[in-house]
Image 1 (cartoon, one colour):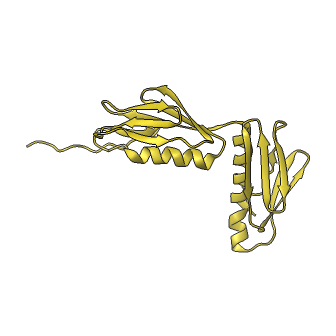
Image 2 (tube, helix red, strand yellow; image 1 turned 30 degrees about the horizontal axis):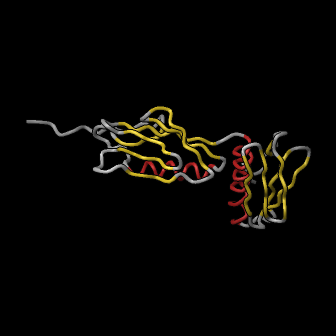
Image 3 (cartoon, one colour; image 1 turned 90 degrees about the vertical axis):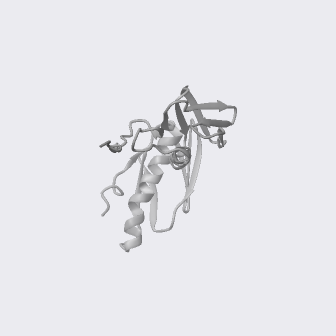
Length: 178
């Protein structure tokens, strides 16, 4: 049995969960999330704990068991507290600007790059070279962070680019003279 899938999920008192056939709806102080699951797992709530059990022992059900539990856990965590990713711009003249629902990046191109911020996410500017992406859906927060990072990923020679906070860039040696 899946070690992750068989663990119970503690439900905080600020969260309410509804289970309708294969759909799970989680409501919390930060918003609502809903997700449909395959009928390979059954979801039950007992004594303020949520249990995910698989229906049969097929290979697909075993693979889906742990995944569905973690997805529900992320829904509960996101509606109770926000997920966040921090991005840092490293390089001369590299900076972020937030203008209403638009993120403007100056990262060494001839023109500023503009990103529209989705409705369910927010971007907080901590300094001109550091932003924090906040949201209740872990997948959307990570996807937006990776799209922003892909505009100018860190390069291995000088370490310039957009990187996650705490990310280690493996540096290469440059050319050596004779």
